[in-house]
Length: 107
Image 1 (cartoon, rainbow, N blue to C red):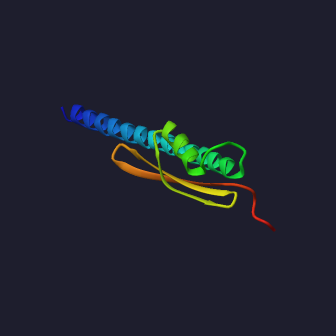
Image 2 (cartoon, one colour):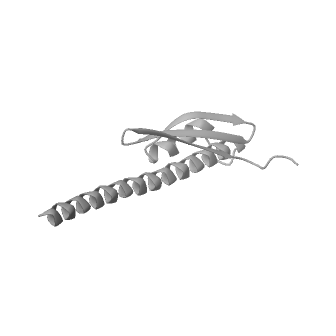
Image 3 (cartoon, rainbow, N blue to C red):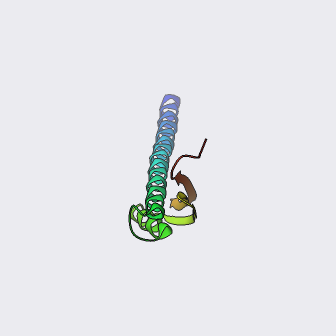
């Protein structure tokens, strides 16, 4: 009987650990997706600032963010450099990702 209880305990602990690791993996993948969306939004804003595409830079960033299920928390354009921060939620956990795009700084 004691062996059965121990086996059930080990099985329960293994299941809890597995579910925890599954959630960590999902959060990691989601975080990378949000970071990629921030990169794309910053590139779109920088392209609009340079005139490579039409439209207002921050509006372009917002369109890209919307396709990824995020919102633009901040959008700053300084000349040809765009810095965009996206915000979204993973379950109940809020997250942000920031990206910068534009020409490299002068040496």
